[in-house]
Length: 105
Image (tube, rainbow, N blue to C red):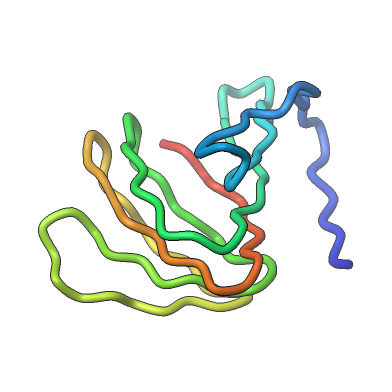
């Protein structure tokens, strides 16, 4: 298991559960207004909508994603990221458990 220290973070202890449990995350916030979530997506193909821009950081497993308006699926693995514009959608395809940190803003 990989551990990352997130100093100064406040953690929402109640999980956000989406898509009948296929995606589970916990929100994190810092005094300066920074917001992130840490979560896991189980094998599935899902569509997410964004409010703020997001950077999805893969910290375990892998996924393929397709941004709104694109026909291309792009694979990312551990240590890689992808950016999603605000007020848009993206599809994510997960074949193995995908662990992530979502950086908002």
